[in-house]
Length: 460
Image 1 (tube, rainbow, N blue to C red):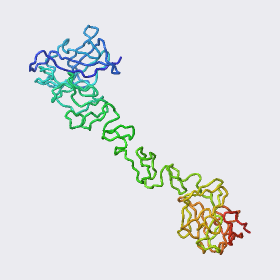
Image 2 (cartoon, rainbow, N blue to C red):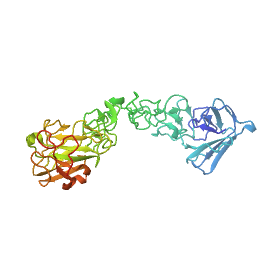
Image 3 (tube, rainbow, N blue to C red):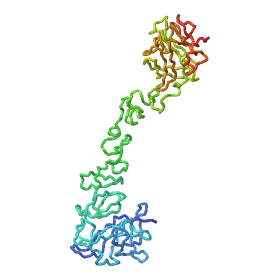
Image 4 (cartoon, helix red, strand yellow):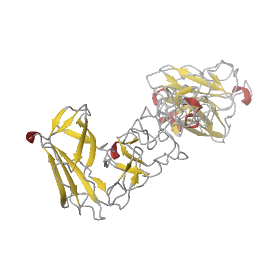
């Protein structure tokens, strides 16, 4: 069984009288706790070897005493506690403490030497103990350590001059060897933050106090989790009341960047500068990720070749130009399309964006007019765009992508009150760029000639 000695080994130096002396003590009362590798206190009689060295590692040993079970002088351990008088079996040499540092080690049974060794220093005066005046030629260096007590410093022993106490680290707290109480502030949960502020004279780490020293996930070095009702970072504010958890919602749409449970809606806002862009927005065909799903367009938005401009009326006669202009597109995609967000522009800077859920079934014709009564009922009436009688353009875009475009001049086959129709054999986004693939309409709809919303007239 692997064993370990917790260096709460007191190193209390005891003589029977309270004298001031420079002599080496006859015996040293050595107390400690012996546990197994799981921290369980042991019981029984154990062989132990105690050695004083001239170096903290390796070096030359100067004195050694064996307490061997087989020779009848093993160390009795009860509930982990043991007490040994060093020097009882092997005399401590008179010159062993000559002013140089000395180091004490312990070895239990066949186990290797416990590490680290404990530093001892020789002084030619006595020191004051909380329990008694003790004549001593031996003590630990009188000092107050600033190192916190934690699992890394377990077993460290020092003399606390202000408290006049011998103290050791048990892995969680600096405590007095004689059981008199704490020597330093405690770190009960082992998270390297003790339970007091630097203003406290017993503070060891110089860090703000741990507000919950029973939970190693709560201390001033943690980040607030923003849920669960705990003050993880010990700043006095819990969850959404903590400044670390405030909802960063730049466009006031209820969604934050970053995603935050303290916002009205916890999902991530992919554009916190635009109120109309968030996870609940409707995706439109504008080349922008409106609903924050990492897609800039949905499957129902048209791509190049899905819709084709197939009829144009630049110069109506029955109605005025500001009432009767219109054009038509056809869905060639073979699937249902939505045109919300699509932008349509002319060659002179005019444009409009479709702002309704304009749904186009496969093969359907869709009419756009600059009024709601151009001589028929259009599918969409717009403002912001006009068709020049002497030549112009109609350009359909989704974001930065051109879906289709037609550029016409006065040479094209339209006239006063006569629309121009794309030959039914050339319904293609490239073929409708060619003037020869267009012809004048022959059917009447309100006195003007054209086939709005219907199959085009056959070209000769």
